[in-house]
Image (cartoon, rainbow, N blue to C red; front, side):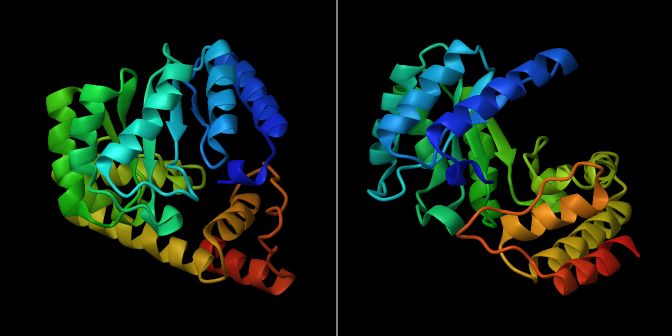
Length: 250
């Protein structure tokens, strides 16, 4: 969420620390390298590969935005060339990037032209497109991760089996139960869980930006104290934090 608010050296240092933690806890590590100039993105990709991370995740170019699957694929080719030994995933989040290319078409093209292409994070509400992405992903053996927390139950029904979700940091058991209930046919229980998750998200995000509000919520539900978001994002007021606390904890 805040990688784009850090300078390159900070992002490298953070990656190095996560590599240490991932080794100790026997976890796989996917590193987000996007949101910077292409030169810096390539630098971050090379750095992450030297550290032997399991995968890279990258946003599109944010100023000279790609308009077609071909332009986006060409961009990712440059990153793939910089880190030829590490799987590369594309981060599709058009609400933030304003890059809204059809992801099924992109997946099929990227699979044929980007040597290290391994899939996408699909943070979008268009589940018709998401279903087509799953089909393309299955045909080409690449991953399609869900990134839209509020659509977890519906997306699981369509066949999404993995998610990269902010709220997994806050309520991992709840999200796990939603998916397990869908897969075991307990649809009503899954719907009830989804309604509760969506309610909590709404209670948090009505106070502002996703990163700012979710960081405040994490401070409330976790023993980890993450501080406030960096400028230009503004911290929440004491009153706002108290209201979130009442809504999600009481």
